[in-house]
Length: 221
Image (tube, rainbow, N blue to C red; front, side, top):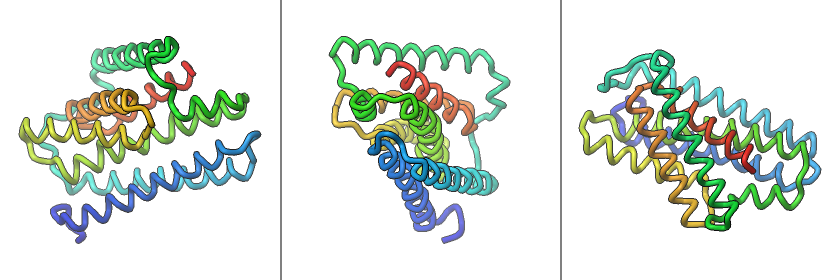
């Protein structure tokens, strides 16, 4: 159960991590139901999200000592061209999605609809922190870091492609929307983030891209 090769142990650990994410997502939902926002709800969000985030970071760093990385790794900050290129791709995709939403060709995200019903500066900044930064970071630990460590560690093209697709679908599920088109859009973003993880072999690249995506999404709301 305690070894990286244990399927049962890895599954149990992943379920624990998944429950942690659901706790944070649930608190975000709870906070946004109230308008104006309640100070104690914000404190609860801060405590729960910080606790789960630190738990993820601790566990991921600890597990990295046990999992082999078969892809060539390098400092993601050392590849400035890659960072700029992927940042432009994410920005262009997100602006394109916003344009399609503005023209009525795509539905709005659930949180966008809820925000437009009771707009406030406090709610906007909370969403920017929660949905633009915190949730994307936790999602990438689940859909890139822990997922590839546990289920897609073999160094083959088929495994890599399957992992990227599965990661994209899981990312879309974690950003659940009632629109099939938005589910597909989120899956595309998730696949891009997963590919960046495999290419750079560092969790910080997909986290960076996911946060850029989340922040632009909120700015375009």
